[in-house]
Length: 81
Image 1 (cartoon, rainbow, N blue to C red):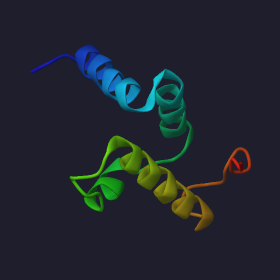
Image 2: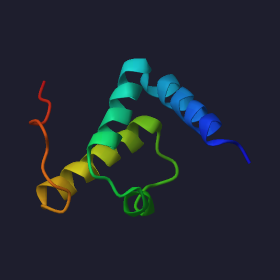
Image 3: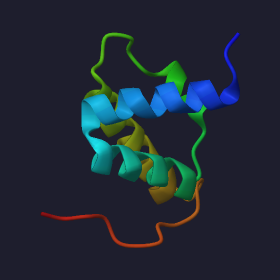
Image 4: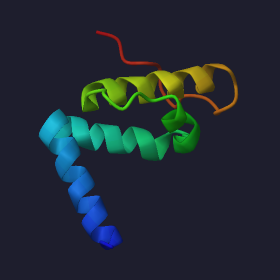
């Protein structure tokens, strides 16, 4: 069994490899800032998705529960391009 520190390090390396350092930090900030039920979200996740697709599904799920009133409110309006 590996230590918590090793898990965090390897997890960040995977995120950074697939998203880049800035987007990996952003993903971590989103997860820490927003109420998020990983177990419920994970049950609906497909195994063959890319990290980008997983990230997008997580953000969509967060938005869904936030809008339904189950997860509180957003601290800022959604990002628009």
